[in-house]
Length: 204
Image (cartoon, rainbow, N blue to C red):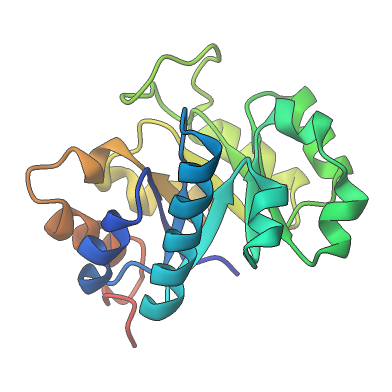
């Protein structure tokens, strides 16, 4: 099972910053970086995550992730269509896939993913998306079809965490609400408490 709180970051330094808050699951999503710099950044992320006990998912770059010894990758729909899935599986990589529509969910399930992400659940705050919000009802619909862990993403707010978990989301994925908060560490810790029934910080 995935940790119930999932954070997307754009640089390994966030792992160092937020590990004291109890962060256990993160995705490193790096865009528009030269190949050598990309390799260095992903390698640093995997090294830091390993030292801090954080499960790190690499976004998109599955072959580089494989070469660097990653255990998890996350693919969007376009990347999924272009990926050699048998080679990915032979490498022992575990796979998460983004989905925005029932049709995309069909494609994702055909790849036998280790988790499925549904989004946007609510209007996204960090970027413009081309898909309508799916809401809690979307989570319930996806839950009925998905046997692997289900990750909710897109415009999530802290106070919604209990309802989203009750709707069927195994893990809640956040970017803006933590990374753009005036106190990211405190906000991350609050999310971790909100996603755990006992209110713990995830270290127990």
